[in-house]
Image 1 (cartoon, one colour):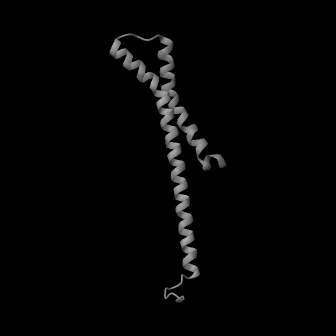
Image 2 (spheres, one colour):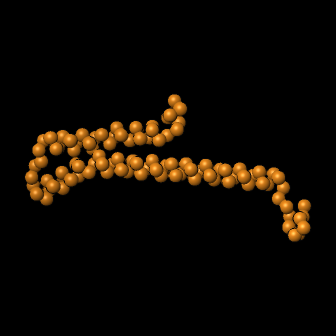
Image 3 (cartoon, one colour):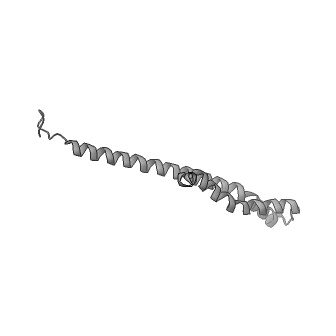
Length: 100
């Protein structure tokens, strides 16, 4: 149908389909934002867990000094802990895990 301006009016079915498309886009954007936040948290956890062992290794290579065993143990434990932290982060951030 044409309105007083000579343009075709949108039918109700077109407006419903457009609203559905907009809702779908909003949901996709929300999921992408949440995924980006989760990825950022994973990167921060990676940096925290691996930074000490990298620092100790660089210090050893440049100065040829062996750090105390307690520092080496802590560095190795932190780097291995990253493997355990990642699933916890995914479980906390994922709604499907929280439903179970």
